[in-house]
Length: 267
Image (cartoon, rainbow, N blue to C red):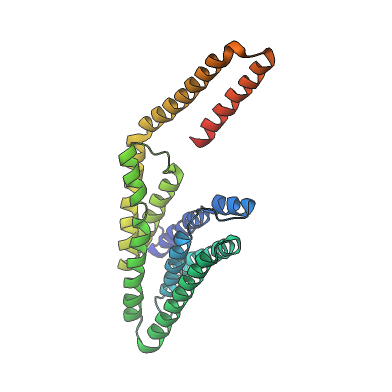
């Protein structure tokens, strides 16, 4: 029979894999930024928020604060490195000096917060329980805020009755991630990991329920938009058809294919 520690390790490793997928999920955004050579209208806020959250959990996971939390430390250490790279790319391609300055100010404040908290906890507080409690409470607050961020997109789904802008696999990964870390923390009970990830599991499950509820109506909306686009184009072709030459028909056909491709890519 598998021991509790072995089961906890297996679940923790699975949680590391899923969390790594979530940390890397913005890669398409940064590939787009790199290709365009500009950050356009993208916001750095999610990456700055994730960075401070990861750094806090790294602090929580170190043996001097909370022993036997190596897997918590490893995945959040990886997340910290990934977010630093994302932010550096953002800074490099940001053409607005004021926005770049704001990012640097926030980054400096985050580093100062972690440095101050680490110094105070490791020098003034002398027991693992008290260190875990202080850092854990702060981690819980930040993680709940992170998990609550999809509430705006969930509101949009309910309002529009469309899941077009709520990717299924990201919602599934968020649910699985919260569930894995909740189970991990229950096996050797850790309230500071159970609370935020339990809430995260609920939010993830709510997203999946919304997806199942509005999946059919989303397909209907997309089909209606495509049909409307094709009908509008047909009217243009019919109205101008009396003066078209044979060569123009070829251009019209190309325009129809282009319009269909545009509709497909934007939907």
